[in-house]
Length: 267
Image (cartoon, rainbow, N blue to C red; front, side):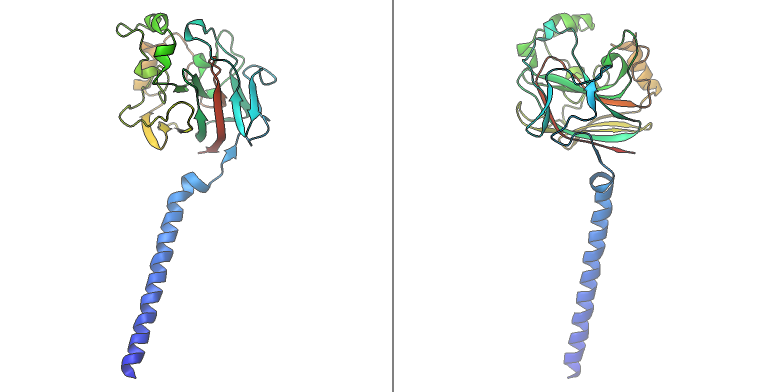
C-alpha cells in the first residue's frame, strides 16, 4: 500500500513538472513571436479599396493603379528601360511614418522593375521620389538585362565594365545606388511568383529582408552613409535620404507590378 501511495505521489509530481515546463515553453514562444507577429500592424491595403493611396504630388490614383483580385496592381504594358523618362509613382498618404517595420508581398513579370520608397516628401521643386527617398529595389534580376538596353544608363553612372549588365546596386533588395544586397543570402523567386519583403528602419540601423533572409544593413546618416551618397548617383541630390519621416510609396517604372498584404508597424 505504501509503495502504491509513493508511486501515485511521484506520478503527480511528474505531471505537474511537465505542465510547468510546457507552460514555460509556451510563454517563451509567445515572447519570441510578440515583436514581429502580434503587435500593432497597420494595414495599408485591405484587398478591395485603394483608400489612402494617391499619386505622388496628386489627388487621385493615376490610371492603371487598381485593386483587383485582392491585389494592388499597376496594370500596364511593359515599357523599355531605354525609353523610360519617369512614371506616376504612388504614395500611401493617410499617414507619415518615421521608425517602422514594413512588410509586403510582391511579384513582377519577366523584365519587370519597381521599387519601394520610404520617408518620401512632396512639393519639392525639380525633384522626384528617387531624388528624395531611399528605395528598396524590386526587379527581375535574371532577365532584365537581356530584355532592356542598360548600356547608356550604366555609362552615365560611371560604370566602366559590363555596361550591358545589371549592376549589383541595381538588383532586387538593394538600397538603390547605395548599398547592394548580399547575393550569397538572396532567395529570389522566379518571375510571376510571390516574394516577401521587410524593411526595418530606426536611426541606429536599417535592414532590408527578402523571403526571410537579411540582405543588407546600414546606419542612416552616418559618416559612411554620407560618403557613399557624396560619391555616387545622389551626390547632387541635396535632399536624398535627409528626411526622418515621410510617406511609403511604390514606383511606376513602366512595368506591371503586384502587391498584397501591405502592412507597417511603428517602432
